[in-house]
Length: 106
Image (cartoon, rainbow, N blue to C red; front, side, top):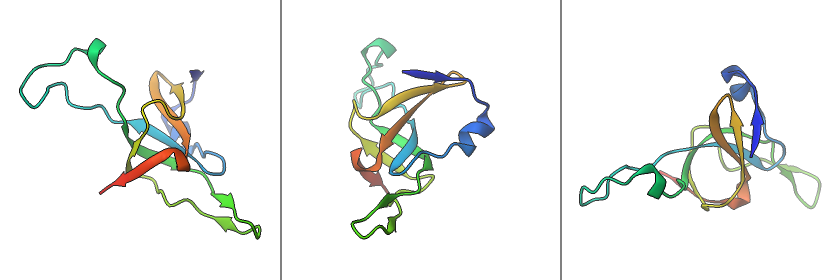
């Protein structure tokens, strides 16, 4: 995990390169549907996140820029172990390629 000292405005001004996106994990519920409380030590990593920043896109075979399908504010699902975790001012974020994201939640 990388650790950076940036202000919150720096996070907003952070632009990932090419086909990468910056995500904030969204924590899941602390209870099961049956009402059992799950302790933090037993929880799995969240696989849902919110897109905070997107890169410019990738070049196609003809050299044209193909922008990313994702946009800031999208809620997405991604693999549990995908991406690179970074810590900015004590907050955990994930940087990953758009192709590693499984889908957009509507």
